[in-house]
Amino acid sequence: KRWFLYPPEKTPEFHPNKTTLAWLQDIYPTLVPSAKPLECTVQAGEVLYFPDRWWHATLNLDTSVFISTFLN
Image (cartoon, rainbow, N blue to C red; front, top):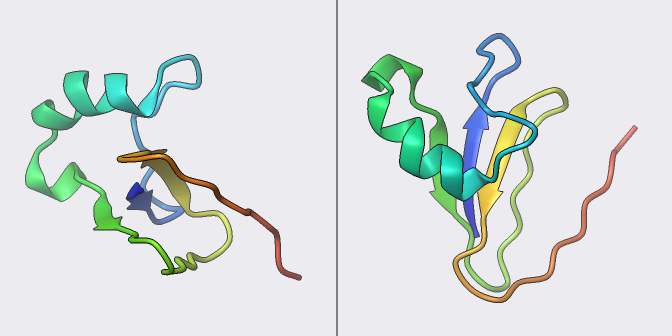
């Protein structure tokens, strides 16, 4: 799974009614380097933690399962 992350102070141009793939194809190529997100690809068996209030989008690169939880 490919992840795109923005800290809370950088509001991304994600649209709630569009897919991550549409964002990746339409918006991502137009972003200047300073507006691009932090990115990573999580492989099978790996875990990604990111802090509360971070913006994020994901793109499945293969069949996947995920578990999401909020930690207090």
